[in-house]
Amino acid sequence: MSGSELSGKKVTVMGLGLHGGGLASARYLCAQGAEVTVTDLRSESDLSGSLDQLGALPLRLVLGRHEERDFRHADVVVKNPAVPRGSAYLAMARCIETDISLFLRSCTAQVIAVTGTKGKSTTAAAIHHILTRLGAGSHLGGNIAVSPLAFLPELQARHFVVLELSSFQLGDLRLVAGGEQLLQPRVAAITNLMPDHMDYYASFEDYFADKALVFSGQSGADVTLYNQDDRYGPRYAALTPAQPIALSHSALNRLSDTADGDANRTAAWLEHDCGRFRRRGSAAELILPQTVTLVGEHNRFNLLFAATAVRCLGFRAAEIAAAAARFGGVAHRMQHVASVDQVDYYNDSAATIAEAALAAVESFTQPVHLIAGGSDKRLDLSLFKQIAARSRALYLLSGSATDRIVALLQSSTAAWNGPFDTLAAAVTAARRNAQRGEAVVLSPGCASFGMFRNEFHRGDSFCQIVHSFAPAARSGAPTTGGNKNAANN
Picture 1 (tube, rainbow, N blue to C red):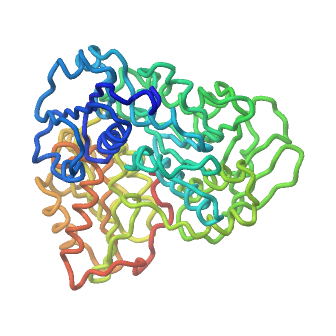
Picture 2 (picture 1 turned 60 degrees about the vertical axis):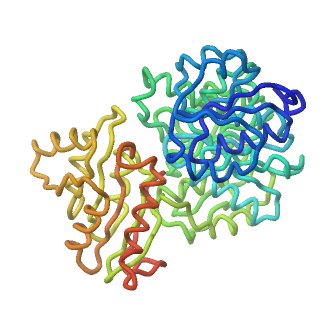
């Protein structure tokens, strides 16, 4: 339902949320003249931050419960991504929208859509950074905790919109009338695919299918960027209706397993730490220089995705390379928080699967005191044997996933500390044991629920704890070693 059709309609926003999606939806709907009800199972105290931002909006609030009449009698129900799709209340709705679908119905700008299990936030933020540095009107939203409805009023047709989209946000488009064709990005990017959210999905194939919605509305005039080194990348390349462009970590592998076997097809790859892009029939161009601000092979590959996306929009290679080199990264993803007594502290709270935690540990040349563990997402945790072996010390946070990790480690020679009932206790123990030149890293490899509202709350809490060590704490560059391969978040 477009904005012009919302005036006078009864609309229920299901889930106010903590990241701004429900808040932005409520503001947008009120501005369109809708009769708005916002309902959330959480209490007023839990949602205080979001409620404070509602101000004097003319809407009705139902907190701590849902009421059937708000769904049966609503013209439209706007679903928050955290709401289970099988909700009995959703089944009562006549018409379902999301903040993403409402935005896409009114968006006239070119869209770049980014998804993947890990790397999507860094890639999306880097695309936005490059476009902004090049003087293009660019807006960043989606799963990166900014609803695109928030910037819809200032959007112009000549602008670009970069959307980071989770599998939940993509899959929810199936619930929307015509939703699968609403997303028609000029460039779609799938950074990789690993098992995740198996506590939500019935099977991995369902997760795979939701990610594929990032390109389902594209045409042959559009492009889909995929990771050729990822086992699922070629599957996506075969499914997309757009032009698939392969990206590879290695120059030697950049053209293997291609659909047409054409050695001159468009591709991008890393070669001697530089990013190269070549259009079919043209010479290779440098789109990512050897020296960049963001360190590590994983993040360099994210930058390659970003630079390739912008090159496909028609911007000049040399200008893209210069802008990409200056991208500094994203909070909660190998974020250097401070150096205290010559020990470096890193916040990698967005690492919610074991693969990301292992990548974090392997990123460092200096010994790592790793804080990990948390709640369970029904994922394979066997990598924690390697994680523990590669860490100087492992500090486990209490949680359902940690119970499984402890059982795994008991059958190995690896040692661990905890489990700790609070993050502060784990950080204090790590600080006590860490020596000069070493690093303390929060890279949990698990979900945050139970101890925290979400992974951002967990990361913010870690930063606050570290900064409480002041006056010793100081933000800035690491004192030694640093991370050589930042985790692909």
